[in-house]
Image (tube, rainbow, N blue to C red; front, side, top):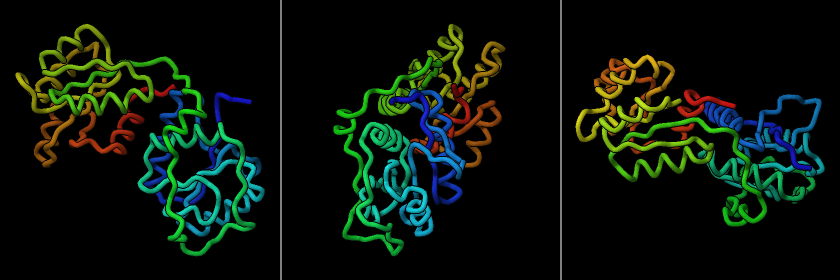
Length: 268
């Protein structure tokens, strides 16, 4: 039976990856099915997510899922001789969501060996990522909950397309502006949850646009995230002085963008 919410038990991983996964679960609240962290050792989750490069984590996975009836995803260099899907590092949130969707749609697997090996990863077993085409065949498109408006301001079409592809996964309605003047016009007509704002554009620059937006009382709750190829301390100070809420350096790193979205854009 399909459900609206599935629990994921996380086994292993360092602090940085756990923080990234926390952002993934926060963003998951915007879609159906949702994936939430499972923290009870007294009950079984719907999915296991384990660090394949951590021997202790693999031992715990074998203890928690001895029959292999519950689907498991591994992150690391090898599947450790199991039949489970493995995704390589670094953790990519879009591929992780795809893998979760496939896991809940596919029949349960059993591990390839009676016990999960705890030695070093078998280099003869290369990581196998989920095939996007196969995923599309077995997984119905997730239902997305009601959307919020986001404004992307950048004169570079490549940047606009990148932001479109990443934001679309969580059904944010997105407007696009190619200049500071256009951005000011948009913000005068609509309230945005977040504005991703390039610094260097034709006409007025991003710092000036940010000041004007922050001076508008109706945009008081709008988060402004500066997008720039400049990452010097001076430029970051200028961004802070203009009132921006965060600063992302181009080319935008997907994981940093994920953290920003989960921090500033409303969850459901």
